[in-house]
Image (cartoon, rainbow, N blue to C red):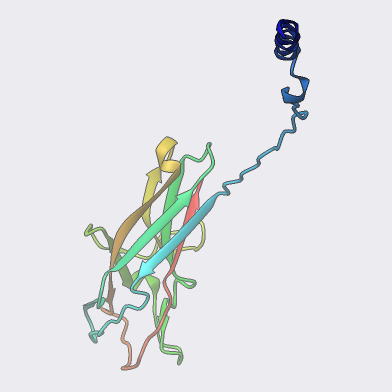
Length: 180
C-alpha cells in the first residue's frame, strides 16, 4: 500500500511540474487602422430680421423698423489673418426701386454698426463698387480661427433731394464675409 501511495504522489508531482502548454496564450499579428479627419474652412452668416420696413418722408430721414442682428461664424485655416463682413447693394444707383424708373441710390441708405455713427452705403468693397459698407474687420489667429461674433446694424434712408413719387420701393441688402 505504501508503494502505491508513493507512485501516486510521484505521478502527482510530475503532472504539476510539467509545463501547461494548453493554457499558454496565442496572439495574432497587429493591424493598424489609419484615421483621417478633415475640418474644412467655413464662413456662415445669419441675420434677424430678414425684412426691414421704412415709412419714407417726402424729404427727410426715415429709420428702419428694426435693427438687424448679424451673426458671423467661421472656422479658418492657420495663415488667415483677418475676417471682414460687408453689406452692399447690387447697384449704387438703384439700391431700392419702385420698378417704374424711380430709384433710391445706395448713398441715400445708411447703416449704424453696434450703435456707432451712421455711414452711407457708398464705399467700394471686394463685391461692389460705390454701394457698400464694411460692417466689421477683425484680426484672427489662434483661438479666433474658430469662433463667431454678433453685430447690430441699424438702417435709415434719407430721401432729401431725391424728388420721389409716392410708391413702394424695394431693394436687397447683401451681406458677405471674407477671410484673408
